[in-house]
Amino acid sequence: MESVHGQRKNEHLALAELNYKKNPPVSSLDAVRIIHRPLPETSQADVNLKVDNADFPWDYPFYIEAMTGGSAKTSEINTSLAAAAKATGVAMAVGSQSIAMKEPAQVAGFEAVRAANPNGFMMANIGAGHTVEHAQRAIEMLQANALEIHINAAQETVMPEGDTTFYWKDNIAKIKAAVDVPVIVKEVGFGMDAQSIAELADLGIEYVNIGGRSGTNFAEIEDRRNRENPYQYDFLYDWGQTTAESLLEAQLAPHHPTIMATGGIQSPLDILKAQVLGAETVGVAGHFLHTLLKDGEAGLIAEITLWQRQLRELYALVGAKNGSDLVHVPYVLSADLQNYLTQRR
Image (cartoon, rainbow, N blue to C red; front, side):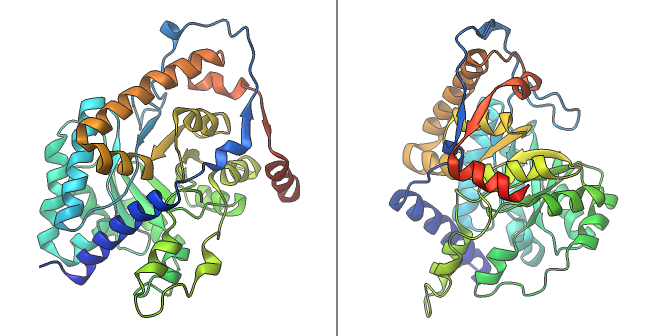
């Protein structure tokens, strides 16, 4: 029988998929238009999608972002995601491993993810309020190549059993100093602002995932989980900055770490746009989860493989032979997004 915490993981999964079907996400990056130039002077054969980063030596600049884990059902999902990652050569992050710190029986479910992809690039995941010991255990559990520390104050605020204290900066710095793998600090879907991004850089954090709004909405999910008093927090369903806004916030930061982006990524074009706006790599969660649940492991492998080919084609279309070239790609913003940028400046 599942624990209360394990059942929460199942509810997250079920509600995320229900919301995806009911209201398919619309990418905030639709507000960014790439300017077409009909003389790209490049070739698809000359495109190199490899990430030029010693800490993240990936063949592709997108990956399977953290989703789930911590129950029988979610462990099964994670294992399928890991198998798809192995088949396609993309990196993968697991969902929060906090449950495994409280329930040793859940460790095996996370270990099975590494067993399904023994040589792949795997990212562990722990909340910002956890101890250095927990962070190290999360890494060891997966033999992880990197660690995601998630920050989720808005989610915790709505969650019926959520935390009420958010003194995280000192703890993040301690974890960063103690572990021997790259550390990514990531939002879970409410975005980031320029000041917070700069503060993380001041803590010594070298990688930040802006985790913007427009994908999986954990304010709505946690509110729906409250069976006794649902919809108490519907005024927070549009809380935070979108992925596009958060990428602009990173541009406004006086100094910032290497930027990763997640939140409502729906296509290879979204990946390209996020990179053009400054993200080195891009994570995909909800779309890949939906594909897996709808079309199975083979369907997800086919989708990722298609995206890999299409992203190469898009690089060539905009005249980019590698990720570094994307800084030269011209774009325009929608009136609303330009207005946001103007006010934030």
